[in-house]
Image 1 (cartoon, rainbow, N blue to C red):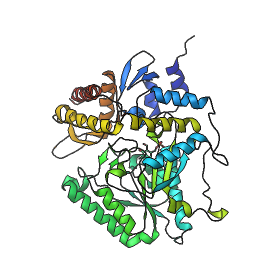
Image 2: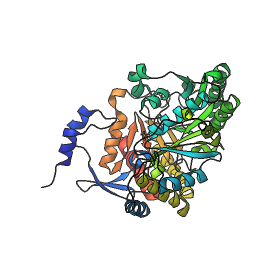
Image 3: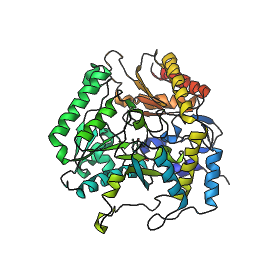
Amino acid sequence: MTLDFAALDRRHLWHPFTAMRQWTAEDPLMVASGEGNYLTDTQGHRYLDGISSLWVNVHGHRCAPLDEAIRAQLDQVAHSTLLGLGNLPSAELAAALIAVAPQGLERVFYSDSGSTAVEVALKMAFQYWQHSGHPRRTHFVALDEAYHGDTIGAVSVGGIDLFHRLFHPLLFQTLRVASPHPYRYAGGSLSPEACRDACLAALEALLAARAEEIAALIIEPRVQGAAGIIVHPPGYLRGVAELCRRHQVLLICDEVATGFGRTGELFASQAEGVTPDLMTLAKGLSGGYLPLAATLTTEAIYEAFLDGPERTFFHGHSYTGNPLACAAGLASLRLFAERDLLTQVRARALRAHALLADHLAPLPPVGELRQCGLMIGVELVADRATRHPFPAERRLGAAVCRAARARGVILRPLGDVIVIMPPLSITDDELETIVKALASSIAETVQ
Ligand code: PLP
């Protein structure tokens, strides 16, 4: 007997970020297998994975070296706890991460999702000041439209109204600064440089007035992913880092989305020569295979937790430092070096840039094309001149992605921004397929 998996899904599953009434009314695409940059459904249809399975997959699906690393670790042990015990892959991966992380980061604290990595960073920053003679430094600064995950601390520093508004009574107060988004900031009237400088000036004013109350600033370095692939003007991150340093505010770089090569650097902070005090990693850390996250920090922060049992960092998860996931992470990092992956990503990004210019820029509904490495956002607008959006009820982004799916490409929108974020192993030809499918889907959908 073959099971009707779609029926089981509709009957029993509750999907994340999904309007379930609509989901249960439609036929779900059920992924049965994957190979390289493709996914195959239960009907045997192949699709290009244009969003790298939600921005996680790095080297493609069923990547032999990762598969083998996990199988080899399975022959040793699948899981043992890091509470009171060590294990081999978690120690080896920690050393490997420190070797490639921005210089000055020395310690690795594991968890299991981007959200938990952010919770850890927030709690570490808070506790650090409690032990360092500045107990009033309890607040966090975050950007408008920030997204750092879905747990309560991460939502507190998040700034996406649609996702976060309802939970407001549960959240701690966060200080906000404007996001340097030249297409929308001040009605789009400023150059990227002027937008950057205005945003930095506002941050400087906030820190000058309130630094004594601020524990840390958290930022998605260079690219705000879930906000719609907002690409910050060059120099903004460096400016933020300098202001934080000057006012002794800790800097948390949330590299959950930008980390592991997506922007063309291993970590986005490195493009601006920034070493944060805390850095969060997840998604691509295990090559996109298994849930694994890490919060990296400096020896100075670590040392504030050393003396006295009351200084212990009371935080940990059952699967912290899972050996299978860490083995995958190690194999993935090795592939970055063996395949000279960052050089390839930069070449692919140039190709993508040319394809976007040729096939998408001429389309009237395309308001802005935003790109940083292989993180790409295509914003659709009703009126290019005024940048006026389409009515939200039209759910145009979703309709375009449905049309792309019929062309064999999996994409996912953020409102009316279509995101292209393929595995880093994507080829030039596959990129062309994705961009052309998106162009036809936009033309077909926006009549
Ligand atoms: N931080 C950033 C910048 C993200 O983009 C995400 C997820 O998209 C998260 C945190 C949360 O990660 P997770 O979904 O693994 O909890």
